[in-house]
Amino acid sequence: MKVIFLGTPEFAAPFLQELINDPEIEVAAAVCQPDKPVGRKGELTPGAVKVLAQKNGIEVHQPASLKTNEALVELSAIDADFFVVVAYGKIIPKQILDLPKYGCVNVHPSMLPKYRGPSPIQWAIAQGDAETGISIMLLDEGMDTGPILAFEGISIDGEETYETLVDKIHARGPKLLSETLKRLIKGEISPVPQSTQGASISKLLSREDGRIDWTKTMGEIDRRWRAYQPWPGAWSVWNKNGQVARLKILKMAPTDFEADLPPGTVAIKNNRLYVDCSDGTLELLEIQPEGKGRMSIPEFLNGYSEINGAVLA
Image (cartoon, rainbow, N blue to C red):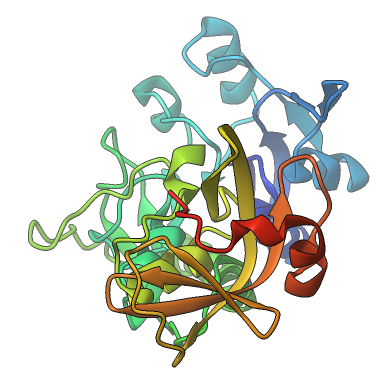
């Protein structure tokens, strides 16, 4: 079985590794997004899939667009049975979808049709879902609307973060993908159209999504904090002596402490820092002021004690 793997970031790499390890599958090429500038110096840096592919001697294609005739000619020449798409980063055009003999197979980390779109893992945690899943589907021209080939549910516990949920997906998803490909080529799977009920979209996250709204409940703020690690993170703004200072909240926890102050108001007691929200108080455990390193609360208060009584926004 010959496949072309389309993917770019770290999330996709374990799926590629599973296909590389499977003796029944030949990964003939990898298609990745172009290298991106990273860091203050803007050095062009390859994604994890490109690094893994090159390490294993797999040819890599990085077209600026899959809509060009050049991309069409390059990929059609490989004559693949499947294209496997995992977090490639762009919609695959119809001219590319039509190339492989058995179709384009996509891994989507949600219970489709719920949370179509680019951020399903974060949304499942932020919305307080008790379960998500891994959907293996055939791509069509829509956004995550194709028929389902296989599905496996994954529980979400009360302390789940984006990173721990990704670990659960990586523990089960790659094997589900390889087994689905082998069953599909043998004619053992009949694609099932997605339901029209319960469909929703997970929007692309921006930096602003990490800004904490202290008028939300403790539960809502905690879920968003867990969902948005490591990016866009969780942060708030402190108007410090007329200057806006951004504080990244690295650790927080619900508490029984009752400050009974307006949402966003900071209270300090016994060298501990609390912030009120709509239905209670959260304790901040670790903070990173803009332009500084991460700090424990005692370290932070040693230099920023004037935050007591401030209102974060």
